[in-house]
Length: 252
Image 1 (cartoon, one colour):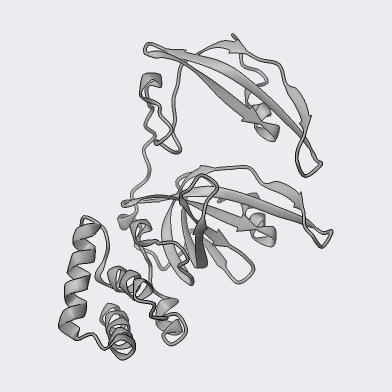
Image 2: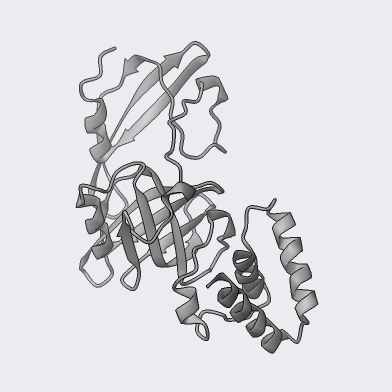
């Protein structure tokens, strides 16, 4: 199947650009070197096709449905993404008012493979997976037909909507390729804005009261925070809305 995927990409790129097979192979090697060997041949060809403006999604849809990309393969505006990884972190589901007057729902989680992490954003009916008892940290999940978009913090996210599918604990995946994630705690002095999702530990020094406010969309919101200290320093940790329940019984 991998040879079929590779040939489908190469033939489509040749047809649309006039590049030779040798030219394309050179581009593949350059792309793999650029990404420090963390991308497969088919993943590199997919990225190259996108960069050259070659639409491989429609003509080779059956092949694309079976292509599993690494997280490091993902670039902005990719569509029909198929990706596998382990759930590293789970965030809340939020409700909002659509322009149609209907209530929408959005939730997200962090997906991890051996090439990195990426946020997965689920919309409306897709958030029902949060109620599945198997939906927990370290579970393997397969995303089909995702779309890569800009995230709120400048990174790339994969969005999962009505035409997408999420497969929990899929049977057609080699689990050995996705070792379980081991929790690693960051010292407070080493925390910085570039770390993304982290875990830390320490002693609670202060626990601030809950404050209520009105959000921009007119709905009610709540916020609280604690001061955490370890042997290297102190940091304020802020909790929003439902997450406040996690610190209700913390003692100072």
